[in-house]
Image (cartoon, rainbow, N blue to C red):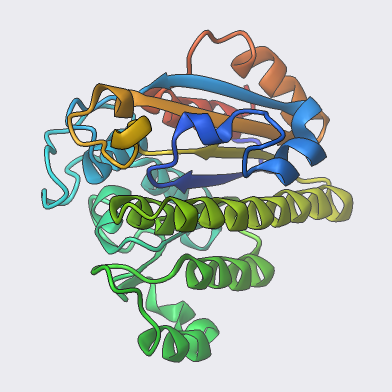
Length: 291
């Protein structure tokens, strides 16, 4: 990035496999806190998944590269091009960029050369080992309490890791990747899926409140973006998404904390007809440049 706005930040959250139907502003939907608290100032846009496979890792690689990658399964290799977190770490420094995700394989979408920023996923891997002491107690808790689906940790632990690091370092870019909702959906457990989304609503409210506290404390303006890697079906096929046309529709919820962030949304997000995977990286980079 040629120019840098030093007092701007981003909180990016992905809710794996959460349908657009659940994200709409309706009283019966699970994200009531998010809409009730900041609905008048938030923007909800719909778009399309970039990779035709409608799978998680291909989608995450598209999001963090800003371009569709040669990745067609959740077992594909590490991304081969510099990513959004890597670019931000090169500009602001590695401690200013942190990514926490429940699903382990997502680390192959976050960096093409591991170690440029803090990455902490459900596989137990953590690039930038200098922060190990901060998480030592939580590591022990996680090791003895894992979900039955593989390559993951519970979302509540991902939330705890991220909260601990944010309170310690207040990074300029924080990414959180939650996945319990998708796992319950694959199991056909709609009630558990719904209950997980209600929990996300509480956590997202906390992140907006943290961003507002930073605005009050230090005048830091924050762009809060919440999106998904893919949708899924409806009716009896509600849990399916791979090669499902209904799974191609994705959504992004955006909220600005601070006058500049609100103006950015008004000028750069509200006028858009759609906001898909390939637009997220350039949108964040534009914000961080000070456009």
